[in-house]
Length: 84
Image (cartoon, rainbow, N blue to C red; front, side, top):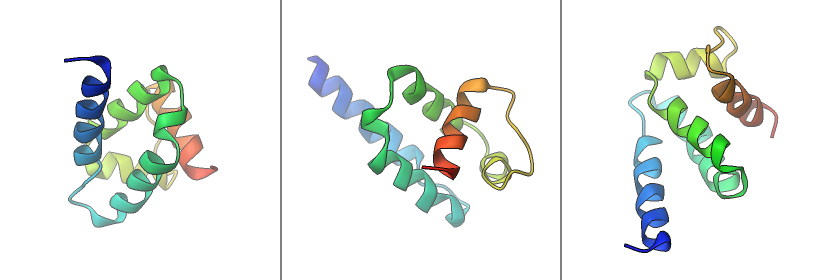
């Protein structure tokens, strides 16, 4: 597989991970994916992927500002999602 194929495969996995059981999360996650994912540095892409590995309720609490994640990279992604 070349790098373009690997990138496309990774994007499919990330897009799939944006589909959550808490429907309120689908829009902000997919919007971030479409509008920002390709343009942010690789470290932030990995942070977004770590965010996607979290439980739905944790992501919702983070987006609403109820809780803060311990992961600095995820906090940076959340700030981009809240204040694009």
